[in-house]
Image (tube, rainbow, N blue to C red; front, side):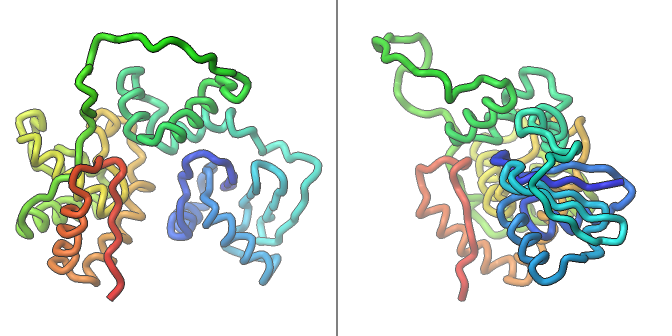
Length: 285
């Protein structure tokens, strides 16, 4: 079996070298992922040192949207080329509509759930447009938008966004409670949903401010929002949980209480900003 990695401008499924190593552990499966620029650079740098890399045996890499290819045989010996295009290579749009959807737990969602999950995944308009263009072959680059008269529409006319904003849990004890639930979930390779993180079967009955604080803490620790409950049914939590476990270890090495103290300061400084745009990195001492 083989692992295939593409350097496309799609949201990567293999974002870090740790993700790459996790995928390579399972040599009995055939998988295909988009790799980040960081991972692509790591592979290219490794090839400068040695053209035989045992850990990459039976792996195929496509760099810069297919400008260059590297194939590793069963012994880890590499072959670099640009022509002809190998049969395993597919264009970004084709990949987006197949393995990419599976890798990001979107393939089996019904339309309403897909729309919610897709919008949560890409809060940035440009990223959302780009990925929608690949998925639906909209050919947006060929469309010239004509200026139109502004029309009033029924709906949210106040001009205020309804997107959730950053909120602090308010105490170290509540943050520790959240952290313990997150840690237990990812160690067991279970998706950390809002149900899990709030320890509630009925999230709708949990106070909105607490839900927003949990989302904020989750975004800070993992750079991801809590997994939507309905996405849980699509499965494949292992790839999601692996990098989160690394984050858990990093935070425990820092110390949970000093980490929360700095996070609380960052949330206070980000008052009024949206959770989807929020990120936190513990300051180097």
